[in-house]
Length: 123
Image (cartoon, rainbow, N blue to C red):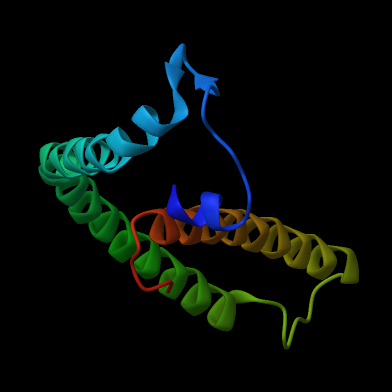
């Protein structure tokens, strides 16, 4: 209020929410403290749910990581690096691996978004 007066802004007679502005500005710090208190109460209330979801996410990430390792092992052992059959079969195999890899990449992006949401280190 003093800053407004120092800059030549007259707020007498100005209403906000059908109350004088000065009255509203005097109550603003208390209202803000109320908002902060409610925010912290809600955070405390949802924290157990959030932690349970984080634990589930970590479990699903471990399973996903194992799936990626299995995919890599299968690719290294079965991909047509030294293929002796028809060329069309080799391309079909590579296309299948490419499709599987695309699925894994989409799953990884979804996990990264969830890690970001729950403020975990992105893997």
